[in-house]
Length: 176
Image (cartoon, rainbow, N blue to C red; front, side):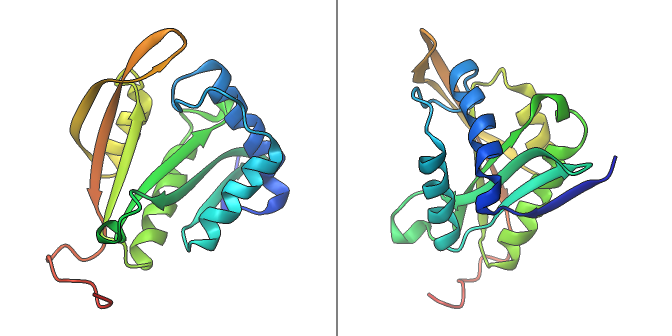
C-alpha cells in the first residue's frame, strides 16, 4: 500500500471538506460548530497557500487518506517565524503512518522556509493518538489549557505542544 504525499490542489477540496465536516460534527479536534461548505474550505486553502504556508494531501493507493497544513500561529509580526500545524487523517487510515508522513513533510517544508518553531494545538488531552504522533516527531507538551473550549455539551481542555525547527542557535533570521 504505497503512500504518496503531495501538494494539495483545488481538486482535493471535496475530500478535505468531507473529512473536516466529520471532525466538526462528531469529534473535538476542532472547536468549530458549523460545518463549512466546500467553497469556504477552498477559500481557507487558498489563503493558507497564498500566505506561503505548505498544504499537503496524503494518498494511499490513489485514495485520499488525509491532509495537513501549516499556518500562522498568531497574527502579530513578532510571531512570523512560528507556525501552527494542522493534521487530519481519514479514520480508516489512522494508525498506519499517514499522520507521521504528513507531519514530517510539513516539518521539513517549514524548516526549508525558515520557520523556527511549530506549535500543535490539540483539542482535548484524551486525543492520545495526536499527542503521541507529535511526541514521535520531537514535540513536547508545554501546557494544557483547562476548559478552554466548549463543544458537544462539555468543557474541553486543550494541549499545547512545541517543536523547534531549523537553526536552533538563537540567531536572528536574516530578514529581521
